[in-house]
Image (tube, rainbow, N blue to C red):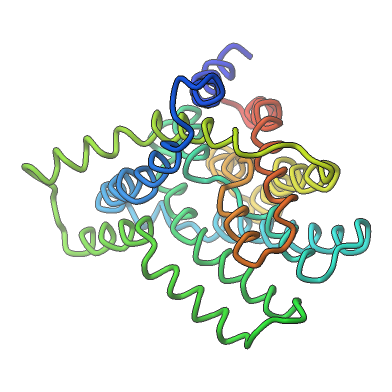
Length: 311
């Protein structure tokens, strides 16, 4: 138990520090967006760029881990949307947004720090291979289903084009693509490029967690907390449980390796859930509440998963 606390305590202390700094006006709330933009547009792309250059493709791109991770993500998307429509009587478009809130996890700001602290650098190639597909795959899925569901939706092809465009200009995916190209070309980082990217990559964990904590001040737990509790439970418990069952009992993946993908599946909601909801103006309240509630509850659930999987 002490080893588990040593893994997650620094992560959530930094999140709490960011929250209190903004709450007590020791750090300006207007500066939080800049911190997260720096992490997403500069620091994390450098981290993933460096990782992809050195990655061993044979061990990193493991379909027996990647496929169950996304099978679990798709499953909670469907369950969340059906639950929103049939239990909470949400409209079809709102139900899709609620389902998206259940499926899009915070793989970068929380996932990378937690998994790296828990299982070390040997886990990261697999984690990066999952992250590389995360935004383009799930955002395209969400947009595609939303265009089918909402009454005032446009053509389905529009959603697919938007998904491709978002992927093409996403700095994180650009960093991954450049790193993969460097890997294939046998590039070795040296000199100024090596030093600068190393310095930027080293700032991901503290800045991301502090910024995430500050951002939590924007969200207030409102009337839709029961729906947010459903989406949080799907994210924090059901998604990793599905991933584990498919990886270990079904596909026979070594539990010591499978736990990397399972733990990543247990992360709280990512900020893109709120962006998606506001883009379509559907179930924005549930998306905001899911970010807040799942982040708070993840302190307990991540501890539980670390104990079950072995920290």
